[in-house]
Length: 165
Ligand SMILES: [Zn+2]
Ligand SMILES: [Zn+2]
Image 1 (cartoon, rainbow, N blue to C red):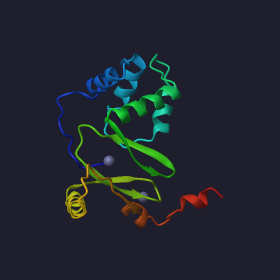
Image 2 (cartoon, protein in one colour):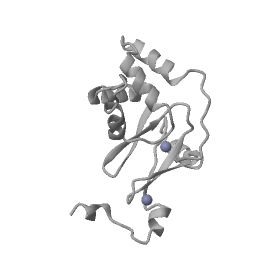
Image 3 (cartoon, rainbow, N blue to C red):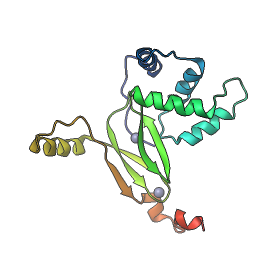
Image 4 (cartoon, rainbow, N blue to C red):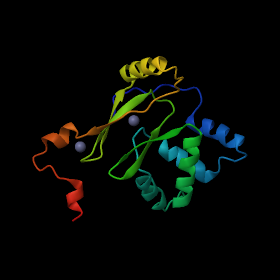
């Protein structure tokens, strides 16, 4: 999904989450811990519904309810560990926002794939525009919409909206 290298971080996502929760007088419960472990097992953009499907189907005592998954995702977002990157194919897409360099996304409107690219060049433009406007910017997020290479080349390029009829 990406060529970007992870940044090594001194504090694990789980410890960072624990710190955040303690500022909210909350604990890292077993269920929250299971969700964090699942989310940070890989760096992938993920659809919360897919995560819910995996976590509610478990029969090994590590099953987590749908509402707990969603509640924990919201907490992880507030803790600065996750961010909602985009909507692709009418679904929210999340990714890690910790231990990972700043990047932006190309979003395919056909297959919903997200391609990452380093944000350096865009950051320079943003900084220049912000300075010219006396604007103190704290970050940016760029979504580039269109059709990915694979979908462009696909002989039977399908339009997802037509599939619904
Ligand atoms: Zn595509
Ligand atoms: Zn990304």
